[in-house]
Each structure stands twice: as C-alpha cells, then as structure tokens.
Image (cartoon, rainbow, N blue to C red; front, side):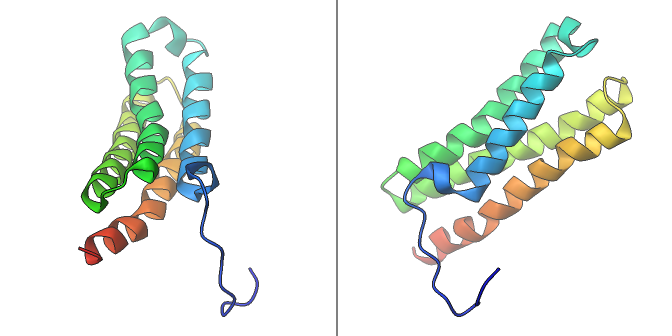
Length: 129
C-alpha cells in the first residue's frame, strides 16, 4: 500500500471514488443476473433488483456533484441505503432459489464494501457542520 505517511491525492471526479467503482461493479453483476434464467422471466423481481442497484452508483455521483454539505450527505446516505436494499434482496433471490449461497456471497461483498467505503466520508461531512 505504500508509506502511510505519504499524502494520497484527493479524487478529482466521482469516477475515481472507490465506492462508485464498487457500486458500478455491483450494478453490472445485478444486470447480468437479471438476464439469466430463471430470473429473467420474473420481471417484477428483476426490475426491483435493477432499480435498487443503479441508484447506488448514481447517488454517489450526485453527492459528489452537490455543493452543499447536507445535500452531499443526503445523496451518500441514499447510496448507502440502496446498497442495503440490494443486500436484503439477495436473500429473496437465495430463498426462492434464483441464486446459490456462493452467488449470494458474491453479491453481498460489493454491497457491504460500497456501504463501508462511504461511512467515513458521511461521518466527515457531518463533522464539518
């Protein structure tokens, strides 16, 4: 990882944020899963999955572009909640069974990781107020 004393440069765009990158990967995984049998035939569940995965990355981008601290925090909070929604829905997929336990774990990991990546920035925003 390098010397901890080195200063890391701040990201210059939302595309450079690790949380956005992980949320993007998650959305791609969800879309791939929704194209697969038998989930592709369950339009309602597939649609709900897509509608919860895409806002995670979009809210991160929106928060990055916001000027006011409270608005940034709100957008980042929405992104984190979207990851939680996707995480919860993996249990529906597992229980019905559209996915197996290994596939669920593969979906849970980016949900948790993206959410954790924004815990620090959310706390930092509210400490500045």
